Length: 303
Image (cartoon, rainbow, N blue to C red):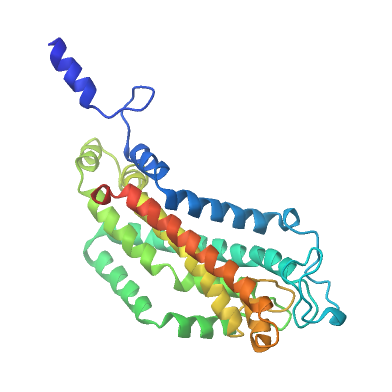
């Protein structure tokens, strides 16, 4: 009997406190050994700090522009030089992170809420409700994203006094929830057939308790991974709409705006175009790498 207990104790996965380790614990142990995760997380933290407290990175004012410094090279705190308006490129790049990140986070939250409820309702209800919601998702997927975004963003930002932030947030949020909804639906269908859900139903749990207390906590992981990747996609989406002239405008400062404004002058001075593009690409890549690392860690088949 003592030998049996020893074997059982040795084989049971446990944490440092001697308690069984769950999926999240196993995923965290896997993530800690991934260099890609730490590199992506470090880049994301830097970008978030840049968006929240740009004064930590530069004391210059991005709106302080003098034509006398037009296309001048690096000097003093302007380590990236000046653009065609005489603005500090480094300051505009640092402050551009704020609107880009705010738009991406807000749009992802909107897409997450829509995708959560549509996917949860479709996966749990099944039958004609699932068929109806699934066809609605298919219809939304059939709309060309860029074309739909241009039309919707232009319509929502028709006010000449608007800086376009709210319009871009709503556009990306309304059009970007379909992937999250499909992932959530699949996870809910898989979770609702598990034994613990059947046991809770036999004990008298209602639909609301089953969905939000039993099914949702056990199917949320892949949904969060999709939203992490969607953050990077939305940052790129904001830049695309701003570059096409239907995104941010006015007093807004973003990487997409900087790229749109400096593009025609790239032959004269490349730095004002290159540096916002580098920061944009690095940020999008960081969020995608972070989402991929988390997805791999939560998928036992990929370990």
